[in-house]
Image 1 (cartoon, helix red, strand yellow):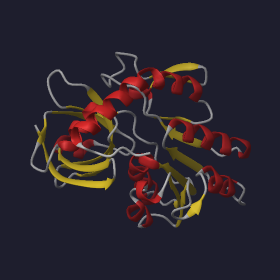
Image 2 (image 1 turned 45 degrees about the horizontal axis):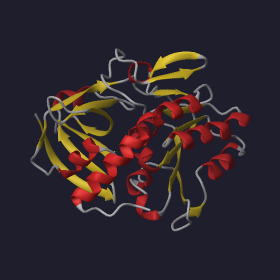
Image 3 (image 1 turned 60 degrees about the vertical axis):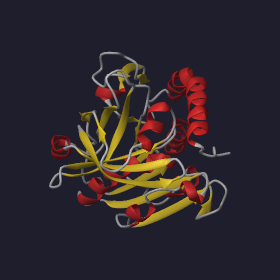
Image 4 (image 1 turned 30 degrees about the vertical axis):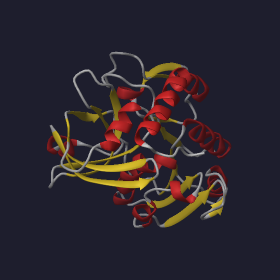
Length: 281
């Protein structure tokens, strides 16, 4: 059992949990994730390890309420326990002193970007952070990122905070600088990562993306997380979650992600009704 030490609500449907998991906290590296399960026959879902405190034996999980499992997770309180937390899983981020690293986080993507930004800064890189969200209330981890960034750019789709722009706007400006960033790490919704990769491609700027696909076992056995990268089949849970953004077949990945979209939306709606939560427009 893994006790919830702290629970915070970051936005309308995004929560941050601090969870007891001493073995995972001691071993995790930036870019890795866990799989949790709320019961013996419950769904297994992957969540990025957004932070860890090895001394306290805790890990931090940030998640968005989407389907039944994340709704149930959001109902848990401090002191409650999560029965199964498996990890750390996935290949850690390759951290090195590149020079200038630009981290681009879209929406919930700010959570997996945060530990990577921490590691890149510790490695001696100049860090530029671009955070984006549909509107101000959906922006997360801004203060945490500001403590790390040498340069910070915030934008919202509706212009309610920061620049009125998609994250690809400032990203293109960064790539047009002399010199451009040595590395771009883009994490967020698949369509956002796709267009970030297309933005950097003409400039020849190396771009890493972190994929969050359908995943069941987390060990490469089920094949549910398979993606096409550079014409080859890869498994996000063991070969990733990070890949060269210029080689990922995003269209194929997004098509697979839509397989259960109707069921997810139905579950999302039912859970909102049951909990009396007003759905976002």
